[in-house]
Length: 260
Image: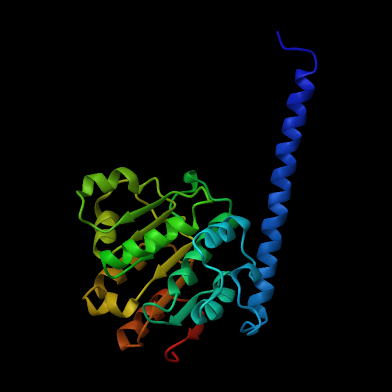
């Protein structure tokens, strides 16, 4: 038998949950508005140096702080204002420049603002030229994304395809190498990118130098056109230009080592 007052208690808890949802929705809307304003204002002032000064959710900020990321590098300072506003970015940056956070933070923020769940499917795809680099990216993602509830997977080969298939369709974020990704696109039933929000092409020049041009073209053909794409490359070869034309739409150009 429910005790007297139980019904009132249930109503109160329901109201509290509703209030929390409304507050979160308002905070998310404000983050989006601040991101647009920041991007529309052009390059960041040199006075803005800290991640905490950007329109980033508390969950991402906690992850950054816990991983001891406090101050932005040059590529982060230049790319993040545009990437957080969901604009395509073509960035010139070498390994060690800090570009990994320049694309992982926007991924987390995009999915957070859309209240992404496992039922929404694959929301972000990071393509890396090598297993080693993909593993490094995944490690950073796990550190800064630990306060979010997104599922993330690493698909780089080295395991039986069947083992990867078991987790593939349950992931919100995938970090992968091109050949293995295309294999799953062709062979894995239920693996669908129809809802993809963000595509990242990291070290695009190395991806193409390793002979993955046709693979990349085939992958991009299988992705929705309505998405954000972030492409980073240390050099601008003709192949990179071709890939940029195929994958990017009205991108913002940001550079550290050379101007694209």
